[in-house]
Image (cartoon, rainbow, N blue to C red):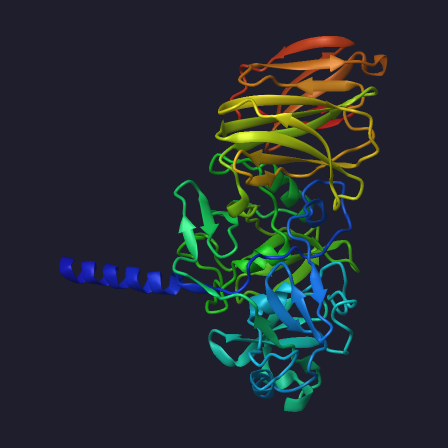
Length: 484
């Protein structure tokens, strides 16, 4: 019996290893294209500018996606059945190339632009053709009569082949061919369990929370949950955009459609993304793990959360465990705290007025290997966004999260927490805030401490606080502080 159990375990491991093998056809996962802000809560899609979509129009009825490395048919091939779509792509000669094919579901979804709707494409790149859907090469796992398709509204879902006009239906399913311009890479292990509550996706290089949130939350609560999470020793988590969230979906699986050998409690649930609908701004996109469709819901509805961290191929040895901006009438002070600096060269402070185009403002040399606290007084500026570019001595670099400045945030009150200290330093520089209350909360919103501040510098003992993250609320805003 033991021998039989062992053999079964070995067989299961072998099957899992095979199932883990996948082919990488896109160099990088592009952003959604959403640049408009729909909330004052930090962490929405528009707050991050990682791999913005960028296409080259080749002048031969093809366009090249410089982010993914895919070449696309610029004007789609029109409405047809899925069977004819496969033949159309296989026999297409376009731009001097003959190796065209029908895109996979993930490839097709990669060109969706969530800044637009109907169609959710950049129409200066892909002209409007009246299509309602576009075919992919993936069929539903348990039903070969259903095919994965992207739609003009921005989503992706499983549709019966007979829905298109040419098959007797009433909807317009079009075909758009694709070809790769680099050699596909076979990834032997799609996911890696890091043993610290995180999962690495070896296709996109994104780092994921292994166990999703215990509670379902509204969209606004989900943004805060991700921004304040500490998982695997990291604090720079965020809510994934809809392309990132959809990237962990496996069209070969259903109930759930995400690999539960790694995302062990995924279940059949709905998971929020950070991406809003541009034409219905009270709604946001989510992923359902029954089959893997992406659709939307009112932001007040509660769904679960998977947090994500950026492309791990760009992550430096150091950990940026805190980055904040504090403002008063005279200046803005940037504070950041690092852990495990190794081979770090310098930090570049970059500013932006629109959150997309950043310009270097100044450079600070790194202190050297170890754990360090940095502070920088920013000259007067009209910029609304700040980020750090962290550069290694070998030229490798990564970016911090983007901080959105508020004209009134922390005005007249400066809060500082020296590294490894058991005290808060609160400097009240304006009489407007003399004898005003301060409240300290934990990450769950529980009130831990309250007191009155007066003009001048005061030191507050926080040695009795056992939590790792606190929120300090004053009349001018809320400041997040990591204690240990």
